[in-house]
Amino acid sequence: MVQDIILILDFGGQYCHLISRRIRENNVRSEIVPHDISLKDLQELSLKFNIKGIILSGGPASIYEKNSPRFNKTILKLDIPILGICYGHQLIAHYAGGIVIPAKTKEYGSSVARIRKHEDIFSGLKDNEQVWMSHGDTVLKIPKDYTIIADTTDCPIAAYKSRSKHIYGLQWHPEVTHTKNGSKILKNFIFGICNARPDWKVDALVKTYIKNIKTTVGNKKAIIALSGGIDSTTATSLAAVALHKNLIAVFVDHGFMRDGEPEKIDAIAKNLGIKYMHINAKGRFLEKIKKIINPETKRKIIGREFIKVFEEIAKKVDADYLIQGTIYPDRIESGQSKKSEIIKTHHNVGGMPSKIKFRGLVEPLKELYKDEVRELAVKLGLREDIIYRQPFPGPGLAVRIIGTVTPKKLAILKRADSIVTSEIEDNLKERPWQYFAVLTDTKSTGVRGDGRSYGYVIAIRIVESDEAMAAAFSKVPYTILERISTKITNEIPEVVRVVYDITNKPPSTIEWE
Ligand code: XMP
Image 1 (cartoon, rainbow, N blue to C red):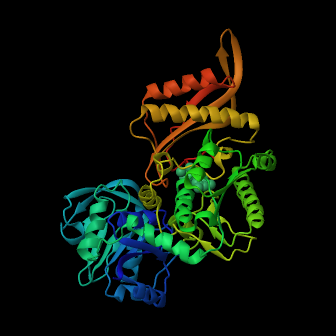
Image 2: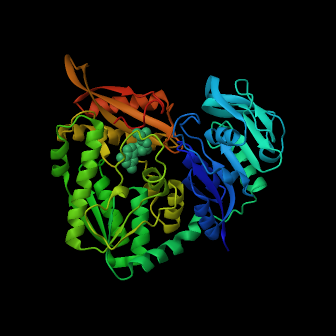
């Protein structure tokens, strides 16, 4: 049976993936497509899927900016339900004959929406709903055939609907958890209005994915970079079942892994019973970045060196196929969604094949989100510590040592990081999203015994997050912070001071570099 699907037109909003994930959480397939998708491409997609609804995402642009992203107006005439969110809401209003202007008061943060009618998209909502706003422009006048269905104090046209078609607009973001009943609104849209069938079930895909790898690679050889993270480990497990001894997993140890991690990766490979190469490239990476202070340069050098090392190995083993643990957001971020603001160069094995000519590239997880990969990993029986491993940047501890990286600094940070990890894991029932130590480039005065000392300042970063796009510093009990601080200063003589990072993202990022 042809699968039902909700399409998301990507206007470059950081929330685009969130919309997609919220839909998939309801077991309905969603796909992100470029905002300017042509009717021909839409038609082609409709041969593969039942397009049950279209969502226009938010985005950082203003519709009055030159070259701001647009969509094909004819889409509004199709017989498919449409929901515009934020920028999408403004653009629909503009195209349908309404007026959009810069708002007198830019709204950023929580607001209260007064719901005028508790039906269709707002079915089951209360009179006043907490919603999350983030916009500079606003709809001043709605199109002729449209009616206002919600307002806030600063935004008189916070939501509208067409009187004759299934077209809706929301100035707020239903996809973020700060909009309390956002999930209900999206559910109302996908089920109540689009009548989509919930037939997207990840764990049922294991067999298909294994079969696809088998069909593509046949009896040739394939190589994969194994980093111990959930994506590469799950991809390796799928490929191991499909290819057995024709799979070669390579772990390139750049020397910036946490304590005990290289050994864990060795154990994973051993468990899977595949051919495995552990490449010790520690000296090589350290040499390349030893004088580098700029974080972006550091990230780029490590990323490039990684590719080089991997290429050398790939040449040696003469593999025909490259397997990568690329997941859906990696693909969209590097490909279609060019309008999203790029904040850091992410080192992902995903950016790999460059000089080596492989017969083909296999990306078994390319249509999944991280939580869906986790579901798959559970189905594959992977160990819990792998499935729930906290995210770890590709360049590793090198971007948690501010300024230049030396073997001594690495050793200090590894010890501090182990203390943070064990204290959090042993003492908190609910694990935060990420918890780690950062070696700041600051030295400070302390006192030990009878004498003064001068040593490093370690920063502790513990954050709560849903998908790393936004994060809040964790309000962990002081007793735990105190124990971490005491242990670090007692056990690591080079550290005299421990500070706790109390910034959220935004304005900070999760990692310090
Ligand atoms: P930031 O620091 O940008 O990080 O708030 C967001 C999330 O991404 C992780 N991170 C990376 N992950 N390669 C990765 O695969 C990288 O180069 C990288 N840099 C940061 C970070 O730990 C956080 O979860």
